[in-house]
Structures are given as structure tokens and as C-alpha cells.
Length: 134
Length: 407
Image (cartoon, rainbow over all chains, first blue to last red; front, side, top):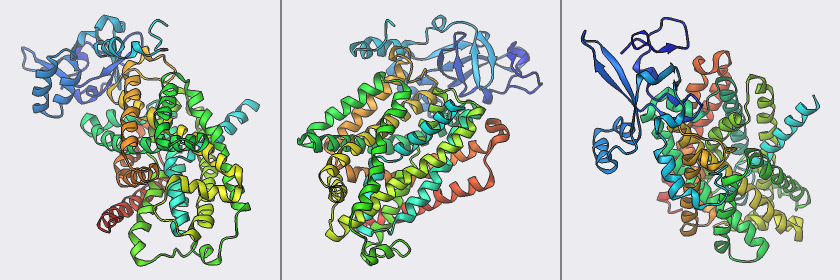
């Protein structure tokens, strides 16, 4: 568990409730320009010199997600996907926490659209009216 | 004020027309043909439950700004979210296959070709609308055309009088002991067909697409109650017509085309066309709702971009789900049994898994973190909860019985 103050995250509510990891797991991740980028699948932690645990990064993607369900699935998926669709967002990028985690930058800065780009390139662009250029 | 009234009217009409789908036609037709008015009680019970459910799902989004899928994922976590997701996938693929079949049979009655030939056409119409039609057209178009089902009442009035022993089944259902399993199975299927959980995902997301707020709560309540009440009367009309026409003929192994026959007899030559168009538009409307609800469910659960009014390239994964899902259902409708059977199986399965879909919903509806001062009243909880338990118990008892008896 970590306190929001310790990580320098601005909290929406001015109460002194501790933000727990549980509050962040499964939260919607949104970029500064309002694009929905996925949900927090897991949280990477780091142990500080004084022995306290701190959140280091938000993890998202199929491996982190299914890994949270079963370790065996994580192993299988990481052999298949080799981390291509998984991402790590440093906690320094977080602007605001709550049911929605708001990031500091626009969506393109994070390069999280691998799956979307793959779909557009391999499937959607062959269907008329996809609005790709619109 | 005038505009508000128009909104209320449109909402009621939409809910009315949206009530009937392949599941409702199949279960109402089979109920009337086999048991006369003996299952009208199940339709009334289901109507009460779906009124409560639709009102709640609109309120959830209007107050919390969250859709149902978002709520499940955030409140219960990813692992739990996978459970209702899986049951929805199975139930919806059965229902969508039945709806595609219903659309195809509707077209085949018009064009006189085999309905199997029309299946790909039905899938194409569905996919084209899912791909680019704006949300308002999807919500209102098929539902308004679906008002043609009100003509089912004309058939009731013009049809032969119900024999007294059939009338008596309204209060005292009558069936041979070896029909018990089938009777209970149909009761479960009616509850599952009307209380379709895909409506939860569809309505809560629709409220977001239409930017509902607390100010929409009055409209929400009126359209949920009046729309579902009117819709239910058309389903009851179908039970009555089937009891009038099909029951005396002792038609066993019912198909959708035979339900059409029931309506055609009292209405004469136009009856067949009315049934064909009603079948096509209501199944199209339901197919759209099922497909969108699947896209909403997955995209919101995983936190992807979604929105029917966005161009597909702005929400690729949402649109990919909505392209892939109907193709799977198309496969099932090509190799599967008659759409009426598919609709019955899908509806009974839905009844069986209703607690999985609706218990987390009731938990959310009682959570002040989501609903603030608008959490559920005690009566609403007890009402919907009781119907869930009834549907589940009836399904659990009847499905194994029916399988054992070789039905």
C-alpha cells in the first residue's frame, strides 16, 4: 500500500484517505485528450530504502491482465505474444487518480494503440466507410 | 414542454416495439400452441421484472455516469467480470443466431426462397447497420417499425372465439403429467426471453450515448413502465392467437413459420405479410441490440474506446468485436436447429444464468458509491430478486427433466 502524497499524485478529493492499490487496479486509464487507453491490470511496486513499498508503474495488456488470473496463463501468453501488446506506464505520468486514472500527456505519447493499429491495418481498412481518413 | 412530450412518446414507442424479438415470438407462440393461456402468468411476471430492470439500468447510468459493464469491472474486479461475460457470450450467440434466423425467415416469406439462402443477407444487413448507422437510428428505427406487432391484437379480435376450456387455462393451467417438463421449460424460457440481460448493457450504454443525467430520471421511469407494458400486451396477443389457431390443430414440433400461420389465419392474405415484416423488423432490432451490447460489454470491461456514433477507425476494437460476433452467430444459425428451437434454448439458458447477470447488478444498484441517494428501494430489490429466483429454479428443474424425457 502506498499513500498518494508519497508518490506526488494529485488526488481529486481533498480528504486524507489513503489511496490503496486496490483502488487503482481495474481503473479506466484515460489520456489528457480523453482517449480511453485500457484498464489497470496490475501494479509494479518498488521497495524504497526505508523498506516501504511504492507503486512504480501501471501495467496493462493481455499478459498482465490474464497473468492476474493465472500464473500459468501468463507464462503461455508471454511465449506467444513476447510482450508486444503489454505496456508499462510510470507513476510519474499520472495526473489524477480515482475510478478513472488520468494521464498527463495525449494518447499518441504513450504508443498504446498497437492492437488498434494492427486491426486497422489488417482488417478494418478493407471495409468501406471505416472513417480512417475522416 | 412539447419537445419533452415528444421525447416521452418516442421512448415509450421504442420500448414497446423493442419488447418483441425472436425469443418472445418463439416462447409466446409455443406457449399458446401447447398450453393455451396457461403461461400468460409467466409473461406478466416477466414484464414486471423487466420494467424494474430497465428502469434500474437507466438510473445507474443517469446518476453514476457508469455503464453496467464498467460497474462490474470496477466494483468486482477482472476475475469476477469474466463470469457474467462468459454467460452473456453463450446466451447472446444463441439469441443472435435465432434473430438472424428470424430475419431470414421473414425475408423468405416475402421472396419465396429458402430461409437458409437469406441467412447471409440477414447477416449483411445487420453488419452494415452496426458498422455505420448512428445510435439513434439503431434504437428508434426498428422499434418504430416494430409497432406493426400491435396488429397482433387485430388478429385476436378477428380470430375465432376461444373455447371455454382454453379460456379456463388462464387461471388454471391444464396439461398431461408427461407435459410437466415442457410446461416448466417454457415458463423458464418466457422469463429468460423477456428479462434479457443484454438489455442491461444496451440501455446503460445507450443512456451514455444519449448523455443522460439526473434530469432524465422521470423520462426513464415513464418509458420503462409504459413501454414494457405495451410491449407485453403484444406478446400476450401472440399467445392468444396461437391458442386460438394452433392449439386445436395439435401442431407439434413448432417452427417460426407455423407461428406465422397462426397470425395469418384470422388476418387473411395480408396476415402472412404482416407476420413476415413483423418478424424481420423485430428480429433486426433485437439482433442490433444484442450485437451492440456485446461490443459495449467487452470494450467497457477492458477499457477500450467505444461509441456507436464514433467512426470505426476511432474505436477499432469495439467495432472488431461487433463484426466478429455476428459471424460466429451466423455460423451457428447455418448449422444449428430451427431458429425457434434456438430461441427457446437461448431463452431457457438465459433464465438459468439470470442470477449471474443480475445479482452483481442488484449489488451495484444498492451501492451509494454509485447511486448516491438514488439506490434501490426495498420493494424493487425484493421484486426483481424474487423473479430471478423463480426463473432460476424453474430452469434448473425443467432443463434436466426435458433432456431426460428426450424433448
